[in-house]
Length: 341
Image (cartoon, rainbow, N blue to C red; front, side, top):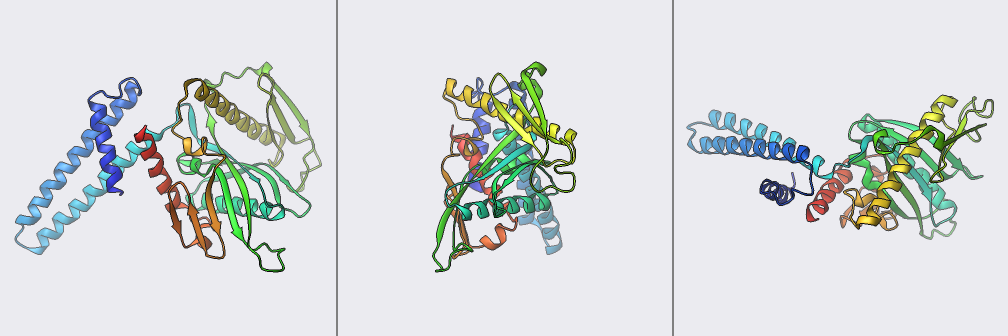
């Protein structure tokens, strides 16, 4: 556990108890956080008692028994802190599941290859976490590289882990097409949108225009045989979402609607920010979207997250889906930024 962050969280809870944030937090959330504060303090008190007992113990067997209790209490304290962290960065009006989009940026063919590599990285991470990935829409160029890929990710704590992947990702490597061994720099952008709760949107059926057409591109035997692709337009805003990679028109309609609702929620929140001048708790994935957030340097086997100012010399492992450590550090970073507000 990050001791410095824990100290900041405890200080935040103390200030919360003194009503310093009474107008910035709901009573339900405040009560939950203060209950966790009491739980943490109780665990810390019991842990201190066991530490005192170790000093008074006459033999190693007793010391070992007390130490086991201390270790168990430390794990319980960590669970309490993790719950508090989740509450601090929780998004109102959102569910766990998300829509992700990857688009190649500068770099031509190499950018398309990088977009495909990013998709593979997230797909592997999804499998490691036991989540579920559902394709919504994919477009490829004549060489088979992505020009766009949109997909849903469903599972426990999906939004918490992946929302900080939003932004511009940069790759530095020798392209497969480079004959002189020169290192090229390319980019791809990642968008992460949380699933919207219907209550937050109030979408009217008459506001939607739903069109069907034949799917195109890779996708199995069903492609081009039926009008299975679905395109949905929200007429008041002009926001459009489409899906062609589902197994049926029903699947594609559900996925397109999921994506449309997520994009509408993003617009609502963005409009609200412009009026109030406030930053959302997911500011890492929104306000910094146009900025370079991470660099993948293949010649040096190094991946650098520019928000954290941290590099890992194991790019070959991370790009295969080992994102746990990176995501955890970004969650802590987000908590710190939220506390600083």
